[in-house]
Length: 323
Image 1: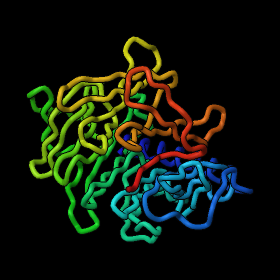
Image 2: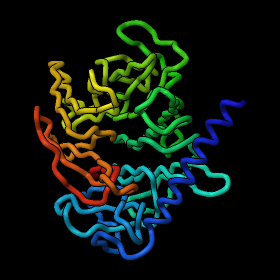
Image 3: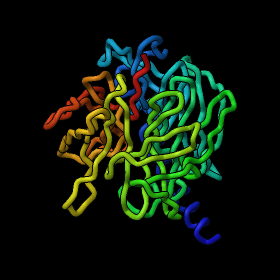
């Protein structure tokens, strides 16, 4: 009970701090060029982090005009992902008490379904047949320490519910993992049944392949977090913790699923996001702005060794490509 109270207290403090940042940044004229409506068709959907009116709300730009004015929705989210005509909006409901939820919206921003979350929003993805994966921090709010616990679930608006992935059978290097400290996060869907995710236990992480039908998670490679499968299904990109450094530093790696070859891409700044693929030749991820708490940019990066990130969309976070 005491541990639960401490965990809840930490979540509330984090939420109150986030609320104050939200209030500070959401007044005045927007720092980005905006339009009143979300664009339809192929688009890039993200969380708007430009200061001023519209801060934190769902935003989108046409896929063929990513640098143009952004359309803004009516709903504020802490994490957002769009695919297959659905938008998953994970949000903190700031108040007394502070609560957390996932809203499922249609492409125009109308609410379809809503369910509660056990803690701070972290990751979300949508499958081709409308399943929604969400990860929330039950305790802690950073993957950079061992003092966190997550809950990752997969469910659909049609009533399908695969529950908490921690209850799936986990096979690490051929042996079943039953440790109480196991965590799962960062789902990326490969098909209607198959997906990839992160499993952590004992200070180690693994890229795992999952099966919804069999309810199994099987290790693929070690030292991999927050995977994302390429549009053609041939590669998985992920965060990879750099060895031999004091502070936690994540680079990017890309695994070729057929050959098992891994391409490592060292980054000057540590990356803490789940990659999104713009196309088969370009990856996207969010990076906080230095010296601007609550603001961030979306960067682009080629999936080749020694590639350098480039600014793609200013004042934006949590990108998703909806084709």
